[in-house]
Length: 195
Image (tube, rainbow, N blue to C red; front, side, top):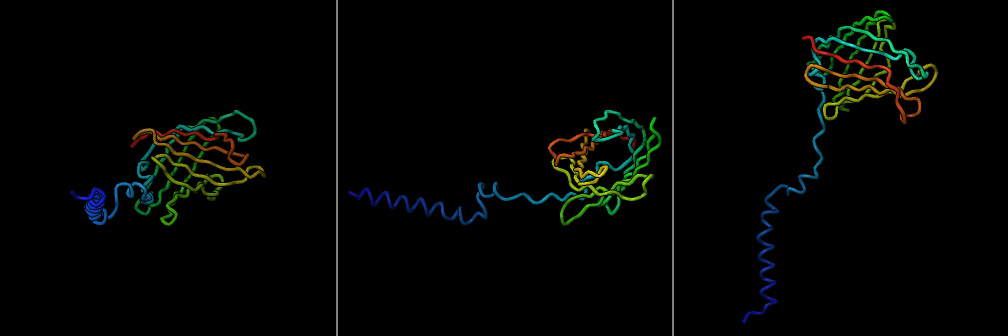
């Protein structure tokens, strides 16, 4: 009669040998594959959805971070053009409303090393590019941040871009003067595709 202990050890050794080639032959087990970090998102074409001409409805808070609730509304046209095969784009906005005529320009530049965009805004009144907001898109939603000076106070700026559908985009800008704990929205725009 065979020794039960020997039979058990022999069966365990055979089972181990049968499992060994499968583990060695596979580059990674399914569990190991789940823990590998995903390749970083290459966002150089994140703004391709916006190329074209849009009818823009926007409103801006006249006196941000002052407790005022006075808004100025505008209607206009936004044109977005690709530059550098999509690694940059140029946004031109012309709008009119009871508060007057508004012309804005936004040069958006993609940094392939950081995989982030800088959004560089200028109005025709100032004629210079402002402090860029920096960020990118996650799951189709864009968030961009910077720190600026408003009436002698250091504030944070957040700019968001949310495609609603293929023909509608929602934009919001908000300021924070308490280190990002609370935000006051001061610019809201909705673009509807014209062509």
